[in-house]
Length: 195
Length: 274
Image (cartoon, rainbow over all chains, first blue to last red; front, side):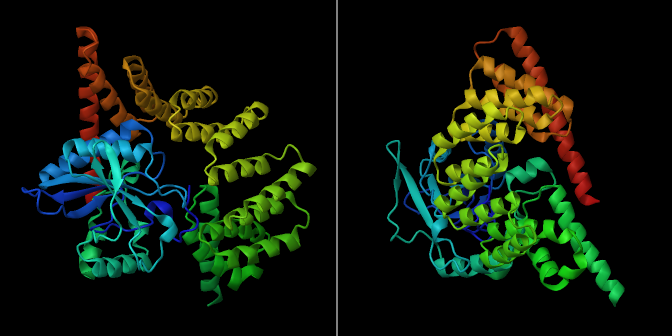
């Protein structure tokens, strides 16, 4: 179902970016807990029903393998809900987030607020949740969670204008045709070009 | 030059037709192609123009292009005054503008004239869904299906609503209906297997494995079914509750599935290089 208040389709509402992931983010492993976690990429998963287990397990397994091969770790999960006004974490988000937190204690859960989405991306529209004592607590939105927001804003806006989301591959696309590459090398190249 | 123009027009028209036939919801592209066709070449489209107006209007609503949607709607209203089908489109526009009460009234007026109008009833249920009123949407859809028991789209929609509410038992029931009436549809089989898997427990896992296998029999290129077969067989084999025979059999299934998966990837890499 489409999020029709947003110009691009909901599944591809944002291109992949360092700090913006569609369903998992991976990061370079840091040895010390005092260094902040840096998410360096993300993998879009599904654009249909999220509440079924098998394909989610497959995706997490394959991505985990790929992460290990590339010295990354799955560091979080993000979700954009079907209905624009629905930006709170639901049972699926909490479950997947908790699962990831089992393997990586500082895992973040990220919810996209589509009501504030604009093509210009002037403000970040993510709510970042941390796992504390089995509950997800929302981070203060005044805290800057981005490595370089200005760069990120420019790049994201350019990617949106260029409709890069039309070529975004998620795991659903991969299951439809194995040739579809969920690591999205072309979009990653575009991101680097725009840096 | 005229010939080139005709070729371009034919191509655009064919694209729109193919998207209609395949039920593609690529709304931005439909708006791109359709808007140009409508603005520049309306006169050359013959009677196709009306179905194109409808297609472009819906795509325009998806893209928040109310200007374009309005234009299409006016043309359709003028050509088909009093049409229920056009009334429904007017209702969809109100939905897109989130004027849900007005939209609902529009559909009610259709239903007053024609109580069996299924499209209007389904739009009313869509409004409930858009408003996040899942319980009510489920209730209304169940009532609808008591009357229109053969409506597959409705059964599928209901299964999705139940899945989103984590009511897997009832979702399974809907998919069972669909499998009964469509025994050759591999997608329903595969989705049923996913629901059973999600429900969990040894019995459901075994059922899910059987239905993943069945989906594969119906379509041996269904990757979800293949992965599902691997996952379910693996979990069964690893369960402390199964005896050695069952364990051995499921290890065999899982191994077979792994080989098939590897082959499928090899084939796809080879295709990539072509």
